[in-house]
Amino acid sequence: MDRLTTHFKDRLCGIESSLEWIATGNLQETLSVVDSTAFTYASIEKKLLSIDSLEGSHEKLLMEAARLQTAFATLNRLQGDVFGMLPDAMLKSQDRLQQQAVKQQPSGTSKAASSNSCPPPCALALKKPKDHIPSLTLLKIPEFDSVPTYMKGRLTYSGLNSAMEEFNGALKTKYVFLQKGLKPTAALKMKNKYQDLKKLETKETKGVFFLVLDDIKGINSFKTDSARKSIFSILRHFKKIREIRGPGPLIRYAIVEANSA
Image 1 (cartoon, rainbow, N blue to C red):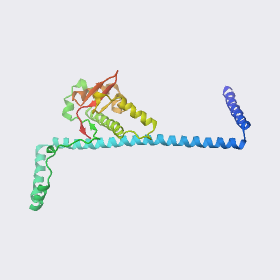
Image 2 (cartoon, rainbow, N blue to C red):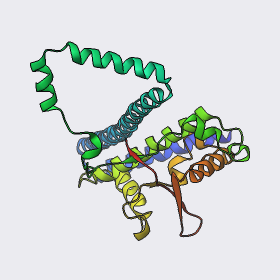
Image 3 (cartoon, helix red, strand yellow):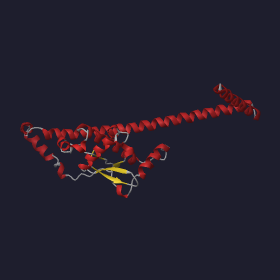
Image 4 (cartoon, rainbow, N blue to C red):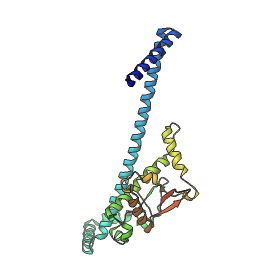
């Protein structure tokens, strides 16, 4: 009964408001203004929904790009690890096959190849690009086996490396966003996010790449306190990250040992 009473009161208020509008001027003009206002409101609401959708799609694309780059870097590292674990006999066999292939080449081709060959990578002083974003190098099995049991807890080798890949992905997403900067036409939500991230930077973090708890607490591998404690204990043990604290309880997890992703 109370709901019906409230409903009819609301309807009567609407009718009274309509009568007041009619009394203040021409009915046709009043209806025209109402229609125009309603159309404008609907148009603005539609544009706002479109902007929200585009912002969400943009963030998803950045995260997917970071995930793919991290996966590609992981594959490259795993390839190197596999060759490092092959028996000497297999490696020597591979070297013999390469030597035979070189001997079978015509002498002119061999000379041309040797004259155009590049110097060894170690002789080149490679400069990191300005948009370089580092990443944690994954642990090898012997390294993980050397970690004390109390430090690992229930954490497995694959679980730890998976967490490191997710950390790398979140780090890349954050710094790709920061490196792009803000456009004058950026939405308020993006401006607030940018300013919040910049506020975390201090003189001590200049040139340092780091994440805070808010950046990683939504990641599956870091959801529980015990998992986070084990992961960061091991990463500190291998000097892959260091903690930059303050002000207050804020902790920044900064990369120490890093390779380009």
